[in-house]
Length: 155
Image (cartoon, rainbow, N blue to C red):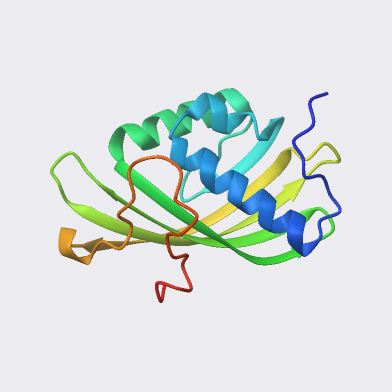
């Protein structure tokens, strides 16, 4: 079995590492790469969809990033305990018509002993914004280390 360090039980430092790894992977917008962080039978709740297992996760993410263009995400640690981590997040993207959105949410994660996420429960709200209201302005891909996080941006 492949391990995805850091492994539970989490400390503040290792929980922060896990959150940043997840943010970096999602900002790659590579469904196959992102899916490797989840167990083969991982269960999700994401809005009205309930992917189960890596193939369904890859399909979900492929459809997501085909619609959510110029996707940029910031995650922030909220809490952690043993093999669970809670995060809050925000991402910005636009649709094919050029309409911009900022989506806010919370995720609860549970990991197995190998550091793979077995459960992901996401609650998400979307806010239409103008292009001038955008706050995430780094080149597509990994958020630079010196770019402000959610708290620094007042989000």
